[in-house]
Image 1 (cartoon, rainbow, N blue to C red):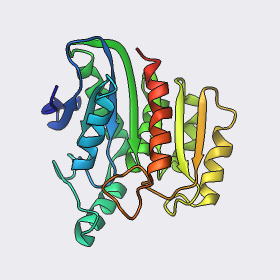
Image 2: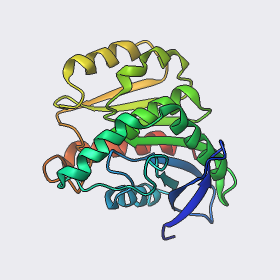
Image 3: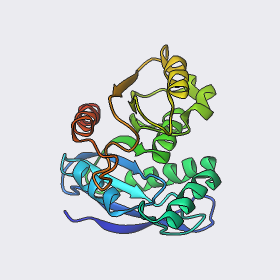
Length: 233
């Protein structure tokens, strides 16, 4: 089934946000929310959503910057738009963002073919929001790829109540080893949290980034993610 764009009303009544929705609607499948990097819902994000959908999930990739600039996307090669994406990462209201994720999940539960299980995953900024979804929402699984601000919310770690996986690169200049060690130490004793480390830098899954993409850790991390989400069937 080809992907399509749908609108999701915000629960605070301040508008709606666009979401790329893809995956089978004619069979019982888990719903996966896929959260973007600082570049918005780019072609790589929709391709990744389609990749996950090909595994048999119903996948939704929402615009998390809509309160700042609806449908904003940035080109990593363009310094001006890249800097705007970084600025928006600092400006985003994470509490409202989690509310928007909850609103999207509420919609997905009404979609045809939904089997009652929800997973959340995300990359970079989206990895941080995935972690917050794991601590604040009633979801069934969470997978965060190289979340850049998880360390700012480690006080919420005891609230994680679903199986949660973190993928972290050992050479991530956005999450230097000191911060990475702090995250690992804080989550060591939290039940159902698994941390995988890779000999890779930041954004190692982004196939559109020749300067960052690394096929082996990307493929391995996705397979581990699929193993977790397959348990939601």
